[in-house]
Length: 317
Image (cartoon, rainbow, N blue to C red; front, side, top):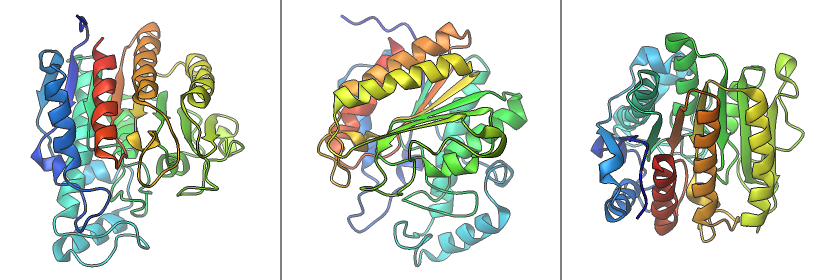
């Protein structure tokens, strides 16, 4: 029987389950419950510290997002009409509040790890990595990853932060949001942008200005599976060990698994389990142990339930 040694903070609840889009949209509100059911069946409750979501404040959101965009999002949240971007992210009534709870949940995870409540955390409906400082994009009304990085800097004086992303889609909102920041270590394994939104994340995109050469983009060809992932992952580990981050953010989108309806990679849940395990090992070896995982994408319900459960399992072992 598996022995779970690490308590894992889980921030989950109805307030973040409400972040999802109506009308058969791939990012529906059922994703939260599918995962929670799988987690319960896995018998992981004893290793979890369950926290209820809370909304991020306007001041916290403004550390990453432009105030003018927050005003627009608030207005669209009241009417629920139109799109927040060109055509991917529909407005709905309460979208501002739902997205603010996603961001606040990620910040609760940050707080728990920084205050020593645990060394690992997981938030299922989180990792909204496409939203930019100035707007929504790719199903993401706000960018909890970006806000978390800014909060770590402003509130906790943590400067050297690693952001690791294995979602099928490139984490462009984070990449371009910190493109000239040499202290934001960025490692992203994703489907090649020639075949998938947002069309960015080429291997030669390594940062700009003082950050030139400090970012790691590892695109995989459509149809790539676990062998290609594990080969790319070796580069991620070397990059992280050399970079010595003080905190690791992990966007573990499950849309990179075989069978996702809108992507073309063929990973198994073993990739996500292994990545989570190794990030924990690296964080422990660096002396702080802090890994905060965010569910990210994933539109095949069984895939996301299994992959996220395996991430939590790996973080706890």
